[in-house]
Length: 141
Image 1 (cartoon, helix red, strand yellow):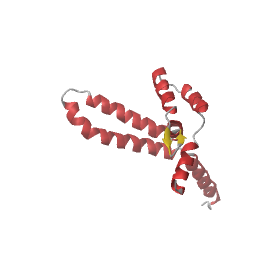
Image 2 (image 1 turned 30 degrees about the vertical axis):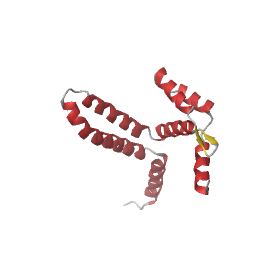
Image 3 (image 1 turned 135 degrees about the vertical axis):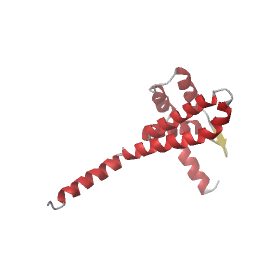
Image 4 (image 1 turned 90 degrees about the vertical axis):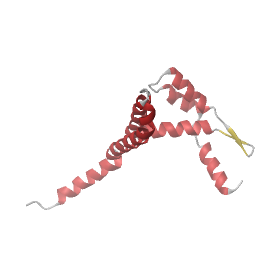
């Protein structure tokens, strides 16, 4: 295997232990069926060049990290997909409108959520604090 492959494998293998992921999954406010599916995904592994790679653990760790880091973006995506499913369930018109509206709704939901997430990041707060500090130094009058 070349160096790029070794690096990629090392990154995939950096997934947290299955025990920790299952504890995080059990703490989620979702149905028992959804928890069971997520726990099953953590067990997925593939054989790459004679090495067993735990890709399921890495995927679940990535998803949990995204949800934690970008909760509003995640909510926007889920809301858009739910609305799209509702539109698709409308007889006759749903079959016509869903393929047109789903990409627009997903783009809007993700964009709106991302804007809220970016506006409320610790970096944005720190920049505002710095601006306030410099504003206090400005001459009055």
